[in-house]
Image (cartoon, rainbow, N blue to C red):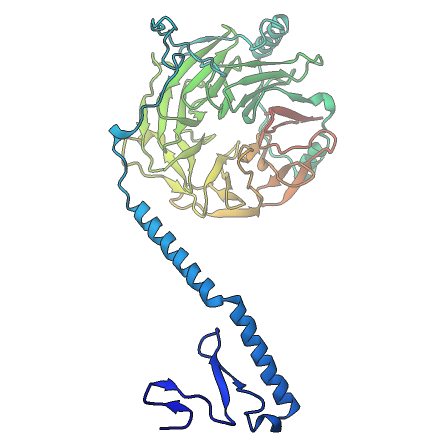
Length: 509
């Protein structure tokens, strides 16, 4: 039997003289030792002062931890946590009460629509909700301005001016290509003033057209919600503009008839209409459930037209045929068709611009399915906003693409693949609230085109087909917004730009 242990009982023996008594700390397995009694520990008196102080501190710390009763607190916390966990488990497994055990919610007599006497209240007929924008009915519509009640005399004067200038014989516009120095001088001579800025429609401008008259400046604008505004720029009074509502949706394309400018054709998502000022009516030419995107005349007489659809198809329309249906609807293989444009010389060729496709088709060979293009204008990596032939010979095509590039193609020969003549880096990221840019050719200058710009100060840019920037129209005081849609007069030096708030800006000599 070793010293200090009574093996017969299994308990530690009393410390021998000179030995130190030990006890367990409340911290667990750590065992502290202290001298049994100073007079019985032979070696205690021989310890250094540091060791005696250390033993004293150990003893005091042990007493302090014992007074805290940490073991009892830990046991109580463990017991509480165990009970709480078992309670959550039992409650989560509890079965939901049956529906019949639930109490029925009380409902007042007012909610039950019962009078205090117990007689049920009769049901009231449903009242039709007031429409914020009344729907335009199908069929012919009278050419009545939206503000007819207040400004009927002014509106009559505007329509009379339109009729008068349309009766005048307009000479063939001189489609020429002057030398570049003279053309740039003419651009520099075009300026804008406050009286040549006017809000013509209420909402974002989506399309514009300008009357070919050389005596007066009459501009038409179509907005996002189906309004068509007419502005007699030559009229100095404040009532020179009036708004009509012939459509329910955005007016994406407009043209005055080349043979009879008393007719203004406008295209919305569901209908193509002809505003005839001589009869003061908006006739319905073509209606379809397939949404429309753009149109162009196949003949100078404007009796036939090609219409592009947002689903990618194109339709051929003959205004001389009774009814409002098309002569042919052709699938050209596009996911969507944004713009269509007819070749100015060989009018059987139609240029269609879609998602990333720009192709030329021969309308003489179009059929409902299986159509193949005559030529393809490749190179676009994102959606194409517009594509147009040059106005005199059709030997050039300018496109606007979402990849921030303007491209000019050489279409002198309509080969299967048309080469790119020039590429211009241009910010075409108009965003959600602006109409997408469309580059249009100047009808007076075969090799120059106009396009809106995101640059500051706000401006409208003119490029040559080589990609060279020729001129920028800007005026800090009068032009402070982006003009996405622009139109040029066929014979006079007049440029009109439309912005996203329905305002038109006129630059002229």
